[in-house]
Length: 234
Image (cartoon, rainbow, N blue to C red; front, side, top):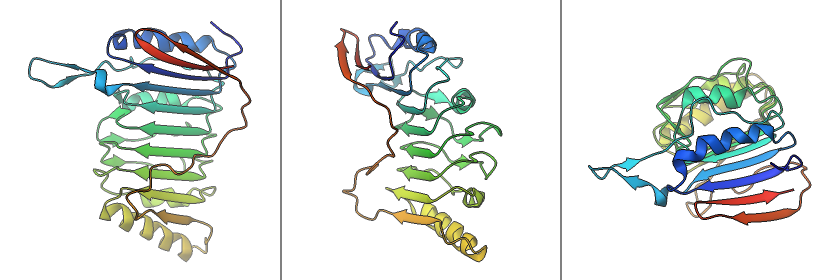
């Protein structure tokens, strides 16, 4: 392993997806890793006898280094209970969940997790119920929902997070808009005029326009192998 690695991006094709949990658990030894991006190339997924897609998700007890500040996951097909592992990362500031990172209709964050999280982005999920309030994300500043079409509502208690500055919607449905407008009205009633609601009506606007950057210096070292793609930043 490379102990000085600060940033790592890894993509798994279906040829090595069954081994992905072994690979991921090795990263616990990267004690300077601050930025990790892991994605599965869904066009490599294997079809079962009924032509349904066979997924090879990360194991439920995967491990990540506590030094992580920024985490991006795509198409990992985890259960929401695995979020407790991510939430326990003590230095995590930016969490970007893209395209069915998690399977399941209900996410109830564990109190005491995500203590340093400032930015949360949820994109293309089958989540229906987010059971969260101000105790779950005490440092959150920026919250983005994109293409979360099954989400019944955005809980109004989210607006009570004292640090929250922006709620942003992309590819939304009407209930999402109603939820954020209600949150904004409630906060104004409490004389909190600092919460900004951004609703992107232009479908050509790609999610997300920008993600707050962390001050992480590195140089680019790219590696390729037959079964997966690695981008290493040292």
